[in-house]
Image 1 (cartoon, rainbow, N blue to C red):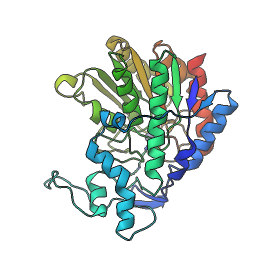
Image 2: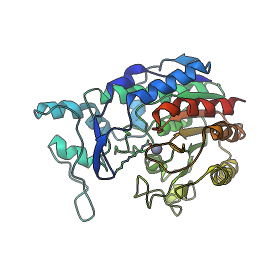
Image 3: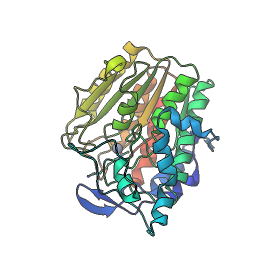
Image 4: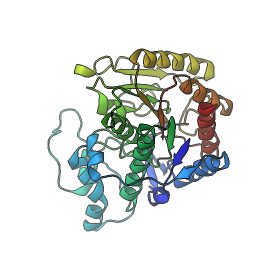
Length: 341
Ligand code: Q9C
Ligand code: ZN
């Protein structure tokens, strides 16, 4: 399968994040993409650049005012006389107004976000837009008839909601890919999220829809990011009721348990009978991931790929998390190789 990659991701280098209440160097760093690119190239996958897409393509899953904010946020920060990375620090909470957009950039950051783990810098928009174009290109290839494609997106996307950033994510690359497949005539699309963290942004975007099924297997939000979504009793709303499924799993989850749950998820997908699939592929389920608590080993990733392939669906893989920097490349390549066998 083709790998879509742009080196524009390098322009996004956050500096520091607030992680579990402590300011630490960003886990989501450029070398992640370099390790993935090296491993995929070595495994023989062809590497292609993204195509260009109209700006309106992003409005299919994000609000216009949010996109305008992302495009201009850093220049607003500079106009306020500030430099370096910027982090939100005040958020609208219970009992406060959700309908007022403050004027200062420091406050706008909080309006459009829900954590302080997602810094922005001067090159963030450039990187994020290129990543979204990688996802859309992979979706276009599959819409045009390829059985699969992989987008090496960095930063990741599945925590980005309709009008919110967080969890290192700004544009929801998986949602953009799923919507693109819908727009190109695939009638039903499933997004299967196997990143360690709940795909809250994807769930948010498709919450009221019955044409895109969202399924996420992840660390229990009672103890794991994003903490405030991803429980098993969330199933969608309105027309979307029944088209969302969450499988929160405890710390220490190993392959036998994971596989059992994966098989349940695959059965739900078969019952839905989609025309195409998007996989939010995080490899932070790895035993040595520094911010996660599952126990998958390198040898399990080809099995994960093979299970996904067993559905026989046209499939777009979108890169999400994975922070054991030296191993992410091998693990991602292993999933794709397992899928192709
Ligand atoms: N107190 C992805 O894997 N941790 N994102 C922040 C906040 C954020 C992970 C902790 C982890 C986000 C795509
Ligand atoms: Zn993750």
